[in-house]
Image 1 (cartoon, helix red, strand yellow):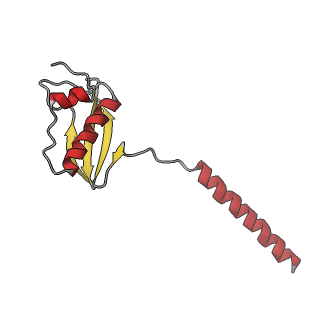
Image 2 (cartoon, one colour):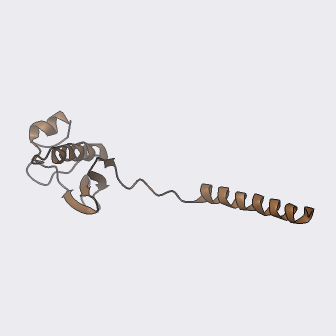
Image 3 (cartoon, one colour):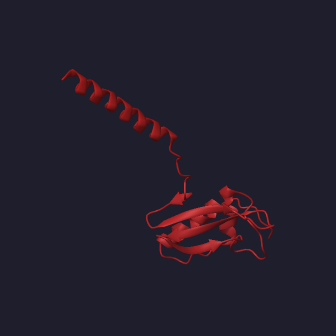
Length: 119
């Protein structure tokens, strides 16, 4: 009767070790989104073409609503200089969407968010 208990205890210890090891060795997924609100999620990405800059995407559920590769509200193809700039404006757009207002961005809003762009 002592042998089955001994084997059961050894088996339990081995299984515990395997579970703990698996927990620490398992790859943790990268943070998928940069900002979450009640209804919307924001991803900020770096442009992959020949242009240097950042852009944002706004999702509602699994649906892509907005993919903004240029700085909104300014003329020409001007890009966000940093991840933080793109995220600031994306969060502002989400706030407008949640208030059910048009998510237009003005030059004054860009200035107040300290976004670097040519006027």
